[in-house]
Length: 118
Image (cartoon, rainbow, N blue to C red):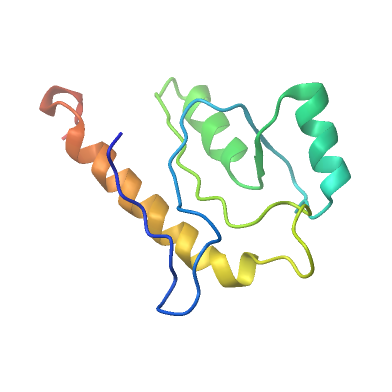
């Protein structure tokens, strides 16, 4: 809580509303890039999946297989087909990346020293 995320990529390109961090949503991972609004709505309606990415499953599976704790931070950069016109990932991908790094570093700073592995 209390982490201020960037809403603008530069002085002329900004999100239509402030960026925010959300924790605890159900996510999914797949080997496809989803740019289809009706399919996104299907996933949410039937599985309560709020986001889909293409990488996290491999990291999580590897950690769990080796009995390591894992947490995933994701920066969402597009609306998976619910936007008007072209998918904005090329525009907002760098902003999402910057914000997820900021959130991750702040999370690490707030961890108790006893939780850090040295």
